[in-house]
Image (cartoon, rainbow, N blue to C red; front, side, top):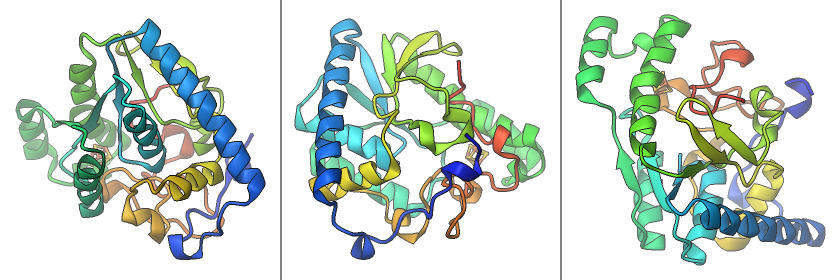
Length: 251
Ligand code: SF4
């Protein structure tokens, strides 16, 4: 499948989003049951498992399912220090709404300070190498620290999100951190994610209502225009093939 064939109009505002029809409600109910079965299977085999909640729409769906059933799955997020205000507002709202702690991981200042001193506060725009180095310090290193001693981790990845995710399975393996990794929402469509959110009153990032279907750090994310790929707003100055921060390398 090409990048063009997975293009999307992005997320329309809640006020203009049509209510899910009966077929969509049924599809979401069936897929939700499958996700719950998957989550319980994961817990049975990997008791010390965590959800990486990037505060995107998919991760909020998983957080909702985990909290409603009070599943013993830890939840963490990576605060890169460069997130949008709307993302921090969602973090606070999610903790309050679910009454559940989200462990907030931050970059190691011993790595970050010298890098910023050498490359500048926005040095990630200068080259792909710089951008990847910034992601390494602000995301990958804190992720590796978080996953140390864990049995497995869970993500909200979907195959339709990106050309780089087309061949991913729900059961995966993270070779960087040497851990089983699970993507229980892998077959979900964007429509199904938003139907679940609307049907279950799941909190979500206000930027989604302003054509930000995929949200990362503020300086590396822009809104998309109708017809653009859902990840066109992430690192928009790079080729689609390089547009990953390294958190989710394919097998
Ligand atoms: Fe740095 Fe941008 Fe990567 Fe965030 S997304 S860690 S600001 S390069």
